[in-house]
Image (cartoon, rainbow, N blue to C red):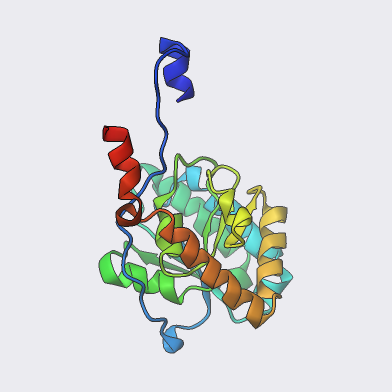
Length: 214
């Protein structure tokens, strides 16, 4: 909207509505899945996975727990150097290396089962124009830790996750907080996460599109 007004003036009529999508059905959580945090997306510098790894290493609660970080995403040829950088970080901290698993590309039902079973999903990118993976996680009732580089302040407003700076100290603090919360509080956050996802369901908000078209 700002760009349109900048180039064509404030007299141009604009309408802004959320990025509604078709939500995936909610999966049942599998008890045998284990305890893990989840990242889904490209392995690329803009995703700040190096900061995430360093933050996890600084989190006492994470390092002393039996939780792991699962990374679901492929490595494009242009970013192989960045992937090697991540491997180097892990090689310097063998205790962390044992707690990080690269899954490669995961799609379809398997991906949404991963979301459903995750304790939290994480997206600490330097920049995102929306971040569909946040909504995918919320659609499974899984809360999210997202960075200020994403437009997801409403995670905090709706008590469905955290919205933080993506430096390693803030990431560590956030991980410590979510791992030390009570079970009742966690289950409430999961409920809030799913309710937030429903606000972006295209079928429940079709009237917004109709108003625009009219």
